[in-house]
Image (cartoon, rainbow over all chains, first blue to last red; front, side, top):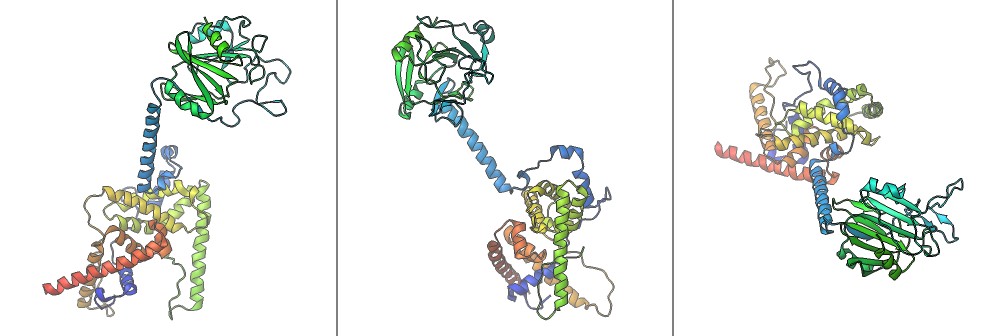
Length: 292
Length: 216
């Protein structure tokens, strides 16, 4: 060690003095354990080959993230969770609310400029006709007689001239016991934007929220308040949009398809009905009021 | 395994052939590391054991430097287990030692937060070897021991950041680049922090020397 007082040493000399000091420090060494007699490397190998550890080992980035960053990531995750909960509450829970959103890409069948159908099949590859609405993701095809046993909901159908029994029925128990009755176009039912579809009457659990519609008016879709048998409803027309249902438990249900036509939606008790057709507002309201 | 350092020419003390041998030795270690890492990534635990054995002493010193209060053996074991899990993310071709030391340093920092009383680094007890003709006299031994203690006391008086950077650079004799990697700092920060820490160490030494003169 240099003889001069440490306080008078320059940086290089002081660094060298520390290097020399290192030889005098009582460093721990990786000696064999006094208990097992195994050195550190052997103990690490044994722990690595422990079947319990191999099952629980986390092979990810988490273990090497610095503690401060780990805390930050955790805090951000908590804040995001709280924000989602706050957002869900702000959307009007516990009632069900519908939220308009932009169409997700490729989720719906569309008609190409040359008139051919993309993403929707009205017939199987073998040429067997398929029931109307089978490509719309409305749920499991059932018969009318199966509806009540499956959902516990009474069958309720429109009773207007020219609209007979539905051509197809679908049930989706994962979407508020959604029931969809579908008719093919006919003399009394002009075709909607979706080929092979003249009318869809849907019913599902939940309530609609007026606040949502007030906001939706600016979204390119026209929303008009109407009355259906004394109940408040809405006539939705114009630009096609997807709907996302925010259910009472906070989950968001993506309707998953573009509406095939203008729609009438209203509440009847705890159920919500939705009719899609090309009949126009007045005829559709009349059709809705005929549902028994 | 002997200590291997990056090539460093010392003016007038190292002949060219010796420099060449050092370079080869460093490359050899590097290549062998890469081979062991590749095998360990493939699940060869024995290869990883060789890596651990190669760096375990340096890892122990690193853990002890950052948290002398903790059981370095336990911290290093845990760090090597985490490093094994993180091996798939190790950038091939990069030096392994500072990467491992960074994981060790993080583990030691975690334990420092929950550690109790701070007692810091300590000097080894003086040896009891019998004197021979070349040994310094007892007065010299006593003076050197006092100077070591003076330097150690000043070092222990520094804050964690200063002590870590000086410890890594000089006590562990890591290069600036290795210190930066091991402590998770930008290289420029290592340089500036080292300079400031040396200044603070010098002032601490000056203060202790001044106090000693007053005492006398």
